[in-house]
Amino acid sequence: MRTTSEITITPFPVANPATDLFECDDDNDGSAVFNLTSNTTDIIGLQNASTYAVKYYASQSDADNGVNITNPSAYASISNPQTIISHILNVSNESCYDAVSFNISSLASPNINLGGEATACVNKTIPITLDAGVIGSTAGLTYEWSTGAVSSTITITEPGIYTVKVTNTNGCEKLRTITVTPSDVAVINDIVMRDVASNNTVTVFASPTGNVTTTYLYSIDLPDGPYQESNIFENVPAGIHTVYVYDENGCGVVSEEISVLGIPKFFTPNADGVNDTWRVTGINAKFYNASSINIYDRYGKFLAGITPESKGWDGTYNGKPLPATDYWYVFSLDNGRIIKGHFSLIR
Image (cartoon, rainbow, N blue to C red; front, side, top):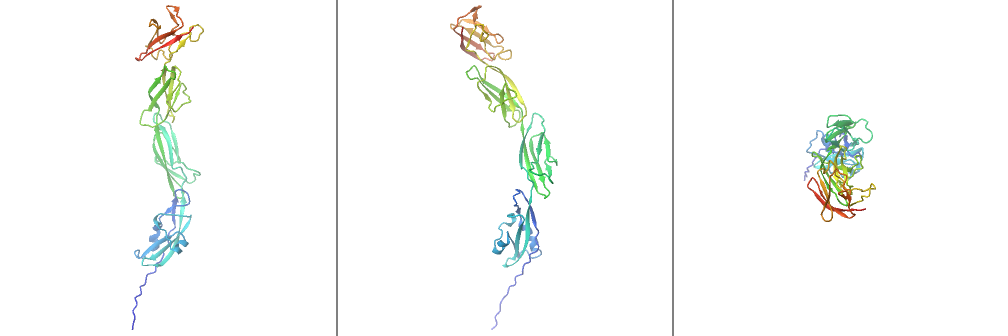
């Protein structure tokens, strides 16, 4: 009796030489991401691609144990350089395979600060120098700015977003983005005062002229500072003052003169040169110059009328000294405000 057997001959694959791969190490940590499958076509060569498959292994040990790289198109290297083992195998019989190895190497990238910030004044032209943010050696680096410049620094005057591509001799590049925000000198919109009080307060409201986000600092009577972040001043003495608003980015200072009214609670007309007359503080030819102040006794009798330019009331009526007691006033400001109260004459 004759027996017939069918024998299947599987073509033995041949692993063609593979190309060493190089990638830029963006983080300069010794590792880069490689597309190992870029070597698949070279390894298969002229053989039927539908008959063969290529698997990649991180080490010879992994290859011996059959532990292949699961994501060869985006493989992060674990050493530098690293030898990759590749097997070309017959898809119908994976025990038939051939092996070839190649190296993958990560290349150092430029070491730079990726981001940066600066401020440009929109109210005046102030040159600002931007740099490529290189850390360490600049040897062999080339630069390409969004402005077209090819130097390591550029000088600008306008707000906007500026980029620079830094390339080293490996051909690896990094992109630095610098945001230049606009700033502007302040416009004082309003000044609100709470005066004729035990705690006089001044609140300054300021804003930029355009669509600008900036921070302003404030001072009273001190153009060179110190400046404060708060726009509220407390315990401000009565009198004429100047408010200063400073753009913290150096785009300028604006000022405005203000009057903080103060009404004394007493006076001592004894000719000693101190508090000899009763007069309101904070009025002059510029502020409330059309105002009037009338003084009365406790019975409502009109005693005197004083003007902003006068030296004040000396405590007399028709040239004769009045007794030490309380007297009343009506202060009619030229803006329609009326302040009433009383004070003491002390002898």
